[in-house]
Amino acid sequence: MVRPVVWQPPVEPAPAEQAVISAVRRAKLFVFLRQHRHELFSEGFQAELAETYVDSPKGQPPVPPARLALATILQAYAKVSDDEVIEATVMDRRWCCPALKMPTKEAFAMPMW
Image 1 (cartoon, one colour):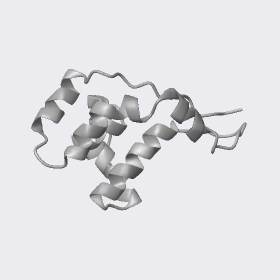
Image 2 (image 1 turned 135 degrees about the vertical axis):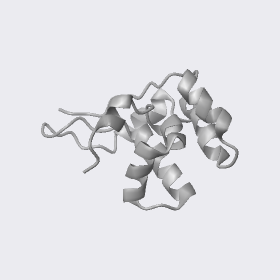
Image 3 (image 1 turned 45 degrees about the vertical axis):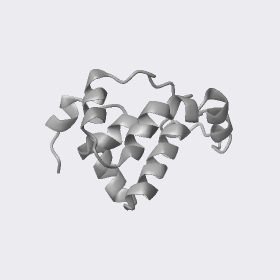
Image 4 (image 1 turned 90 degrees about the vertical axis):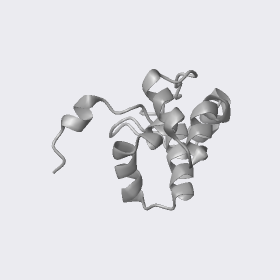
């Protein structure tokens, strides 16, 4: 069965994340979520969130629910559509800090069409 894994992001920001954190002047929620995500999404809470998933032998492994929750919080905060969330997680480094890993240079080298 394919079940979501517990997301265990690093507590300390990577140098690239620290640069983004230092540059954020407005939208402090991004910084707050990056600095406290490990506290907000404890292993126990993530297990509760994972219970909402249905076991399925098909498809790709699901995205950890904590990451989806962070993306949903940021979506409501930024008042953007689902499509804009996807774009923001690729193009806006503020979105990468709390919810996702920082994009690799290979991600930017991929054609956009």
